[in-house]
Length: 413
Ligand SMILES: Cc1cc2nc3c(=O)[nH]c(=O)nc-3n(C[C@H](O)[C@H](O)[C@H](O)COP(=O)(O)OP(=O)(O)OC[C@H]3O[C@@H](n4cnc5c(N)ncnc54)[C@H](O)[C@@H]3O)c2cc1C
Image (cartoon, rainbow, N blue to C red):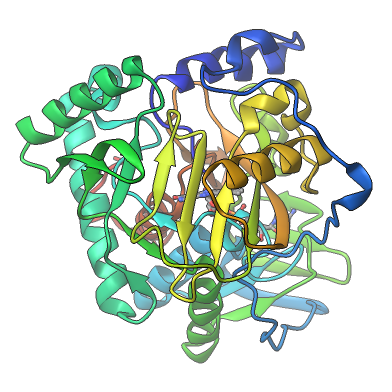
């Protein structure tokens, strides 16, 4: 994740300036970061496999030859798969392709938080995007979390989430967030406990993001979608997507890619900026965290899985310019810092996983959702918080691609 709240103002500058080529690093480091970390590079084994991967995936074929479909979906993460399911429900024929594997990007390598709202904290969203829009999005994301839980009750843990303040200033910001949520009738409680002081959002949840995407892909196949892995879209134009060994002739294309969207569709350069986010996970340890936690304006985050393992991520701001990259391999610097944070939390369990993935940011924190070329639509750039918004947006854009008006438009009116 994450990056919610005040810090995004700094990011806004960074993203814009990054695109323009300057380097405003210093302004993006957030209070609460420790100084240089002691690190033993040789000791870090960088396997780049997420804790969510149980190794059970049959794999899908590569596309060979020419296929025809009404819609070609590029990107089989949570957003693309949500779109595919809605397209199938609307009676469309669909081919879906992924350059790597199902949820091989951020969708299967994230923190596993299901958070209501936009990337910005609620009070900020109200201030920046208007109360009506912020409220409608928040309500829709709450309903989407509940729908995900109803669809696969064993997959989603309805445990809420904690925002923990790392400073007096952040505590005051928590209070502003609490007031704004409460004013609009959304559930939120002040929190004080072993994790620290902040807010409890009782309607948020946790899940295994990779498992969910794999299930969605298998169900989409059963429902008639034709899906292919290791099939990058090399050329995307109106009516056709070209891949290394084949092509898809289609009426419309949806590019559902978060990190690296501006590489797939260069028209979006300057509006989307890709960053690397990193995580690690440990062997099982004693139960300490009943619900996901994010701290320091969302920069640092962790949750304890039902089997006792800890999945922890963040510290991106500590990496500065180096983390604004399309590269999705874990780095020594950030991994050392994550390890230090883990130990500061009192967790001594051995580290079993280290991984990274790319996400796209926009200057205003709102996702991209538009027709970029004639007949070619794009969704993505969720600014670090895309599990729920991406799923919602995938469903919404599917209506448009099927030639219908979404029943409850949020981003595409
Ligand atoms: C470490 C980390 C932690 C995070 N934690 C959270 C969290 O706890 N909660 C939350 O809400 N969000 C979180 N996020 C953000 C969230 O994971 C993403 O916003 C979301 O998963 C994006 O899903 P997606 O399907 O839109 O895109 P992606 O996951 O980016 O999927 C796009 C797919 O497109 C494929 N692709 C790319 N280019 C091509 C091409 N040319 N041709 C074909 N296929 C292509 C990729 O291989 C990829 O599989 C986190 C992200 C990271 C990296």
